Image (cartoon, rainbow, N blue to C red; front, side, top):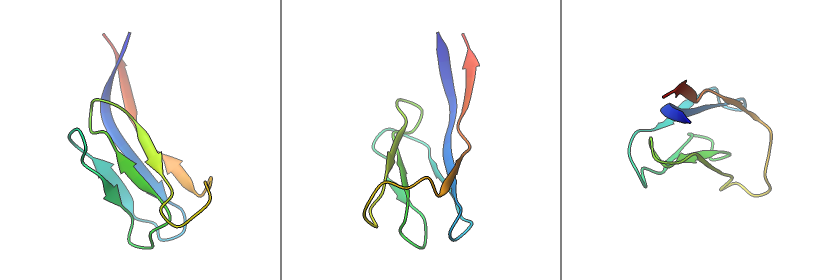
Length: 65
């Protein structure tokens, strides 16, 4: 089973790296197109600017237990 080490994504519109560090730690990029949530408990991506978009680079890191 894999364990989450980092929960993060980079917005390709504004370039900001958004990282969630604890459960329910909702973080949004400065342009508002993507958000990251879940800390090291779960990975959740939200799109507060509207429709789901692929305009982000996934930066989450996992390790095998």
